[in-house]
Image (cartoon, rainbow, N blue to C red; front, top):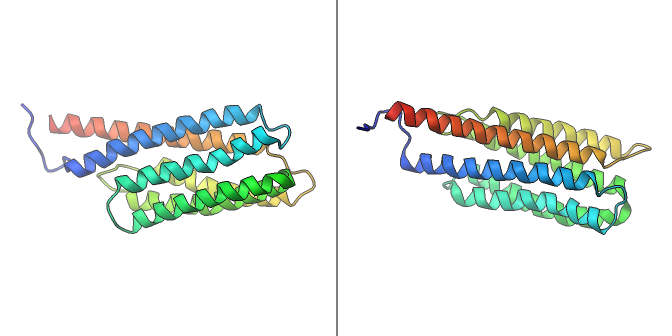
Length: 196
């Protein structure tokens, strides 16, 4: 017989956790798949490479929209909305920058990574707590995105900019999203065990 304890999550919190688990897992798998596709398609900044480059921030924009619809009103929701708009604008800017070659693309991607990473850290900090468990994968991913984005802009200004780094960026981001999903799954399992 199951009994509810004081540590059991509310139905709303349990629903948000399940929604985030699916979102993080899907986002992580898509990022890794994108990295594999881009690794073999970016030798030249041609139509295929630009399409993939535009698709990456659009994946983030769609993820932000899904996340935005799943969380209640508040400052966290506004940051998520901001990130969705930012990612949409980044997709447009990357598409335009693609005509100029690798350096402009890397500048735009780097600027987006800096601001988006900062937004991710803010959301991760606000989600820390007993209901959604530790957010350390999200915090590490956002922090790395911020730092790496600065590095991309420095590299873009140098003599030999390269888009090779973007596959590594997407793979790393995907792995952190998958780890966050696994952490939420573990948290959910622990909660069910305590309330059984």
